[in-house]
Image 1 (tube, rainbow, N blue to C red):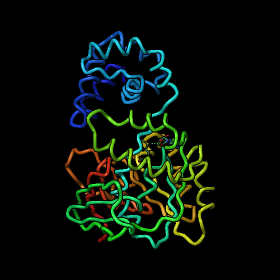
Image 2 (tube, rainbow, N blue to C red):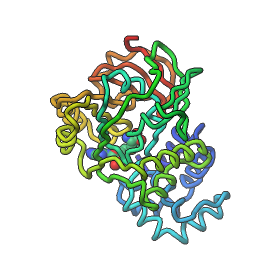
Image 3 (cartoon, rainbow, N blue to C red):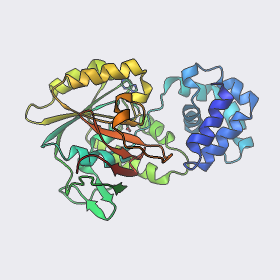
Length: 320
Ligand SMILES: C[S@@+](CC[C@H](N)C(=O)[O-])C[C@H]1O[C@@H](n2cnc3c(N)ncnc32)[C@H](O)[C@@H]1O
């Protein structure tokens, strides 16, 4: 896809309805040959609109009008290009814990959670957060947490009365982020789109939890390193490997290799990925005409629910 189309697609398919600022900005860039030519000098994998716009924000290219933004972008381009070259889109959305919690809580505790593609590991703290599922509130044993995730529920989702006990948190990522590091925190914040204030508040609250009690995150490819993480989990816990919004970054054969690897390990497997990312689920998904972006939650290879991309809703179609 050419670069102009890529920015237009981002504006109309991804940003529309989520960030009016990014919708307009990406559409303006799509119309600007000078800026497109600069972005076009980056390696193809570094030309993603989300990556470029986040790198621009890190370097203060945040003006409201396109004219001023463009001046900032051109003046600061060497620094922006360097950030785009060294960083990845690693959006870490703790809100996804809301759609994972009902699944985690069904396993006998205590749990060892191991996340593949963990980014900063912010989805490894489902036991430290509070939740609102429709009218039902779920709080940690110690009382309400600093952040409450809201999730609309349909179908017979097994909403627990309490989060499960988690005794071990680990993960693997090509580039784990450290929430005790101010620059990593700044990058994760830059990846949240302008205007999404609730996401920033959530990110800051969960980043503080992760900074105070860092999960064990290792660097590497998820298929290569998942086995050692499972082997290192406490033997008196239920080991759950999970991943969320990650397999889309892998070509299909690599996704299938990861699935085969996990299924041979002594652990449960929870996946939360976009519809179509694991094609083997296709004939077990209920037909649904909605065009909303959704993920499929599956437990040990059995799809049980659709989930909002940031944990906003859980449409349960699995067994009650
Ligand atoms: C969109 S982020 C999602 C992070 C987190 N799972 C969440 O739901 O918030 C995707 C993450 O997957 C990581 N990733 C992509 N391919 C990977 C691979 N082959 N091995 C390990 N991590 C990978 C990226 O570095 C990034 O941090």
